Length: 129
Image (cartoon, rainbow, N blue to C red; front, side, top):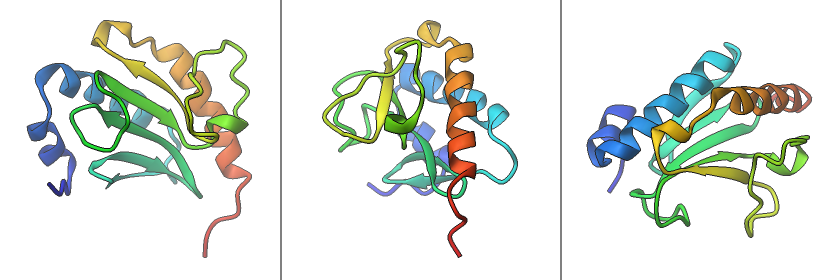
């Protein structure tokens, strides 16, 4: 399966995952500055500026490492100041994440707080030329 755009992704997802992905995408798109972009990478939404910022990985899409729900992963989660211990630290030393099982669990405040910190971090990276 090769997903090329968000429409194809939504068509491949069960309704509960589609809603979670949609809500998370809206929060991210509203929060990220204009220089940041979204692309489909590894069949999932990937947001980047100078480097990777975050990724949304529904469990339906293979190779995400989760059995259920939708993972919101921060590419440089290991460098974020997650004072509220919002993110989980799995076996990956760099990507820290939160898994959502229902749309009701999504609280945009901690997500926006971490995104703003991730944006600050991203702006410290040199733009790849």
